[in-house]
Length: 141
Image 1 (cartoon, rainbow, N blue to C red):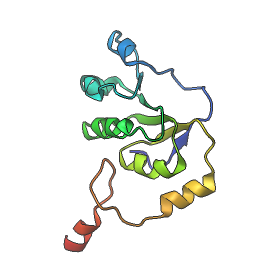
Image 2 (image 1 turned 180 degrees about the vertical axis):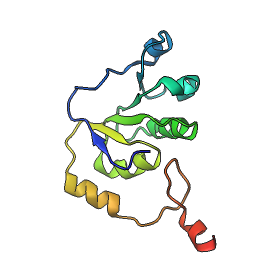
Image 3 (image 1 turned 90 degrees about the vertical axis):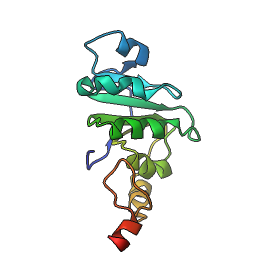
Image 4 (image 1 turned 30 degrees about the vertical axis):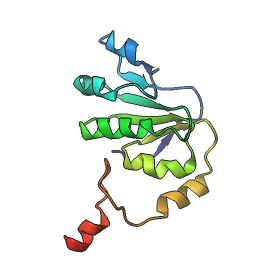
Protein backbone atom coordinates (compact mmCIF):
# COMPACT_ATOMS: atom_id res chain seq x y z
CA UNK A 1 0.00 0.00 0.00
CA UNK A 2 1.29 3.45 -0.86
CA UNK A 3 2.53 5.65 1.97
CA UNK A 4 1.09 8.81 0.48
CA UNK A 5 -2.52 9.67 -0.25
CA UNK A 6 -3.68 10.65 -3.70
CA UNK A 7 -6.68 12.86 -4.35
CA UNK A 8 -8.75 13.34 -7.44
CA UNK A 9 -10.93 16.41 -7.35
CA UNK A 10 -12.06 16.35 -10.96
CA UNK A 11 -13.20 13.80 -13.48
CA UNK A 12 -9.82 13.48 -15.17
CA UNK A 13 -8.37 10.01 -14.60
CA UNK A 14 -5.21 8.51 -16.00
CA UNK A 15 -7.36 5.78 -17.50
CA UNK A 16 -11.15 5.66 -17.35
CA UNK A 17 -12.47 2.93 -15.08
CA UNK A 18 -14.97 0.71 -16.87
CA UNK A 19 -17.95 -0.97 -15.24
CA UNK A 20 -17.49 -4.43 -13.77
CA UNK A 21 -19.55 -6.03 -16.55
CA UNK A 22 -17.49 -4.25 -19.23
CA UNK A 23 -14.24 -5.25 -17.54
CA UNK A 24 -15.21 -8.92 -17.42
CA UNK A 25 -16.18 -8.77 -21.10
CA UNK A 26 -12.83 -7.50 -22.39
CA UNK A 27 -9.18 -8.42 -22.01
CA UNK A 28 -7.40 -5.06 -22.35
CA UNK A 29 -8.96 -2.96 -19.54
CA UNK A 30 -6.72 -2.21 -16.55
CA UNK A 31 -9.11 0.00 -14.57
CA UNK A 32 -12.48 -1.05 -13.19
CA UNK A 33 -15.21 0.60 -11.13
CA UNK A 34 -17.07 -1.43 -8.50
CA UNK A 35 -20.50 -0.19 -7.51
CA UNK A 36 -21.95 -0.76 -4.04
CA UNK A 37 -23.30 -4.29 -3.85
CA UNK A 38 -21.16 -5.75 -6.63
CA UNK A 39 -19.02 -8.76 -5.72
CA UNK A 40 -15.32 -7.85 -5.66
CA UNK A 41 -14.39 -11.54 -5.55
CA UNK A 42 -15.06 -11.85 -9.30
CA UNK A 43 -11.96 -9.68 -9.83
CA UNK A 44 -9.61 -12.03 -7.97
CA UNK A 45 -8.51 -14.01 -11.07
CA UNK A 46 -7.69 -10.69 -12.80
CA UNK A 47 -5.67 -8.87 -10.12
CA UNK A 48 -2.43 -9.15 -12.09
CA UNK A 49 -3.74 -6.91 -14.89
CA UNK A 50 -5.46 -4.28 -12.76
CA UNK A 51 -3.80 -0.91 -12.21
CA UNK A 52 -6.85 0.81 -10.67
CA UNK A 53 -9.96 -0.30 -8.83
CA UNK A 54 -12.35 2.55 -8.13
CA UNK A 55 -14.89 1.72 -5.43
CA UNK A 56 -18.14 3.66 -5.29
CA UNK A 57 -19.34 5.09 -1.98
CA UNK A 58 -22.81 6.40 -2.96
CA UNK A 59 -23.67 7.49 0.61
CA UNK A 60 -21.34 8.02 3.56
CA UNK A 61 -23.34 5.53 5.60
CA UNK A 62 -22.96 2.74 3.02
CA UNK A 63 -20.03 0.65 4.27
CA UNK A 64 -19.96 -2.05 1.60
CA UNK A 65 -16.96 -0.43 -0.07
CA UNK A 66 -14.82 -1.06 3.02
CA UNK A 67 -15.34 -4.81 2.54
CA UNK A 68 -14.46 -4.49 -1.14
CA UNK A 69 -11.16 -2.86 -0.22
CA UNK A 70 -10.26 -5.54 2.32
CA UNK A 71 -11.19 -8.39 -0.03
CA UNK A 72 -8.94 -7.03 -2.77
CA UNK A 73 -5.97 -6.13 -0.55
CA UNK A 74 -6.07 -9.38 1.40
CA UNK A 75 -6.13 -11.28 -1.91
CA UNK A 76 -2.90 -9.54 -2.91
CA UNK A 77 -4.04 -6.58 -5.02
CA UNK A 78 -1.23 -3.98 -5.05
CA UNK A 79 -2.53 -1.39 -7.52
CA UNK A 80 -4.32 1.86 -6.83
CA UNK A 81 -7.47 1.44 -4.75
CA UNK A 82 -9.62 4.57 -4.99
CA UNK A 83 -12.64 5.48 -2.83
CA UNK A 84 -14.97 7.65 -4.90
CA UNK A 85 -18.19 9.39 -3.94
CA UNK A 86 -19.62 10.49 -0.61
CA UNK A 87 -16.29 10.18 1.22
CA UNK A 88 -16.03 12.20 4.43
CA UNK A 89 -12.75 13.29 6.00
CA UNK A 90 -13.36 11.27 9.19
CA UNK A 91 -13.77 8.11 7.10
CA UNK A 92 -10.43 8.37 5.32
CA UNK A 93 -8.31 6.97 8.19
CA UNK A 94 -10.61 3.92 8.32
CA UNK A 95 -10.57 3.56 4.54
CA UNK A 96 -6.76 3.59 4.64
CA UNK A 97 -6.88 0.70 7.13
CA UNK A 98 -8.96 -1.22 4.59
CA UNK A 99 -6.36 -0.61 1.88
CA UNK A 100 -7.53 2.53 0.09
CA UNK A 101 -4.67 4.77 -1.03
CA UNK A 102 -6.52 7.13 -3.37
CA UNK A 103 -9.60 9.27 -2.81
CA UNK A 104 -12.01 11.13 -5.07
CA UNK A 105 -14.48 12.75 -2.67
CA UNK A 106 -17.49 14.64 -3.99
CA UNK A 107 -16.89 17.47 -1.49
CA UNK A 108 -13.57 19.25 -0.94
CA UNK A 109 -11.33 17.91 1.86
CA UNK A 110 -9.79 20.35 4.31
CA UNK A 111 -6.13 19.27 4.46
CA UNK A 112 -5.70 20.51 8.05
CA UNK A 113 -8.69 18.53 9.29
CA UNK A 114 -7.49 15.44 7.40
CA UNK A 115 -3.98 15.71 8.87
CA UNK A 116 -5.48 15.89 12.37
CA UNK A 117 -7.72 12.88 11.67
CA UNK A 118 -4.78 10.82 10.38
CA UNK A 119 -2.63 11.71 13.40
CA UNK A 120 -5.36 11.29 16.02
CA UNK A 121 -4.57 7.73 17.14
CA UNK A 122 -1.14 6.22 17.72
CA UNK A 123 -2.36 2.62 17.95
CA UNK A 124 -4.87 0.33 16.30
CA UNK A 125 -6.99 -2.30 18.00
CA UNK A 126 -7.40 -4.96 15.34
CA UNK A 127 -5.59 -6.27 12.29
CA UNK A 128 -6.62 -4.86 8.93
CA UNK A 129 -5.35 -4.61 5.36
CA UNK A 130 -2.68 -2.10 6.41
CA UNK A 131 0.54 -2.72 8.33
CA UNK A 132 -0.80 -1.53 11.70
CA UNK A 133 0.07 -3.86 14.58
CA UNK A 134 -2.77 -4.20 17.12
CA UNK A 135 -1.92 -2.64 20.48
CA UNK A 136 -2.60 -5.91 22.34
CA UNK A 137 0.08 -7.59 20.24
CA UNK A 138 2.52 -4.83 21.10
CA UNK A 139 1.83 -5.31 24.80
CA UNK A 140 2.07 -9.10 24.75
CA UNK A 141 4.45 -9.63 21.87
